[in-house]
Length: 313
Ligand SMILES: [Fe+2]
Image 1: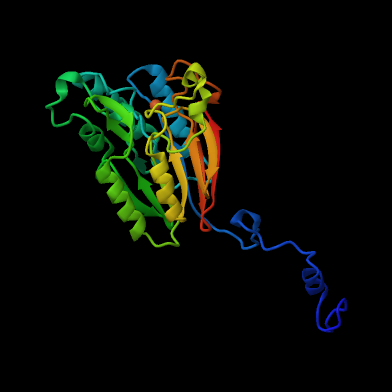
Image 2 (image 1 turned 90 degrees about the horizontal axis):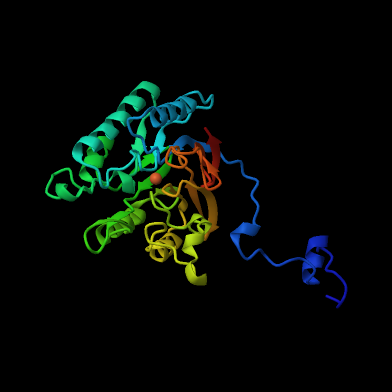
């Protein structure tokens, strides 16, 4: 070929490319746009931090929220409860805790027809000082009330794998609680992720956030000019989990509750979503910080994308 003259069968793109005038191939996936039509796999409703107790305000509030979910025209297939079902079992005696669970069951029975999948929250754990030898002490009571197979588990819905974690741990002195994923559970999680088909998108639910913007919403966490985010607010195991998810790119979304705040963070191709609360400011006000009480509708798609619509109630 004569220098400066195009080969006879070169098109305009080839000419530009040879002249270095076309951009290089995109370096990361985020620059690639796809025209393939995605298909919705599943819609579910996320409700969390209901903090119910046998008083009119929380019982009416939870009933109203459940009714709102049932009236959705595009109805969710099930409810995922993100934990803190009841006001507080941590320091209450047996009678008071039983009344809170009874309040939940009576309101749910009267106002909900959808299946409910639960995640354990810190306030669902029974930590009453004098109950340490009771068979229901700790998480056993919540597991029974929620009718779940164990404190962590995995199931498939609509082609997505749901992994429900237990993010609430006793502190070093045995008292409740701090955030964390214990060694036994972490081993199970690694095995579970290894078993799941790489084409199956994975959604992870932990009551306490793994990655969240919300820890930075409190001035008290910036003590003496340094950020101090307690382990009870964001999991101290975050770096380990982030590394694990990086090895499994089919992990697409991590949901949390706990903070009663709404956020969304994208990191390493995973969308981390903290999902407000039904109780707002623990039923004192409808708004906590700047987040109104509400629930979320989640649409999951076959290409691993997730859409959330937060509905204030
Ligand atoms: Fe809560």
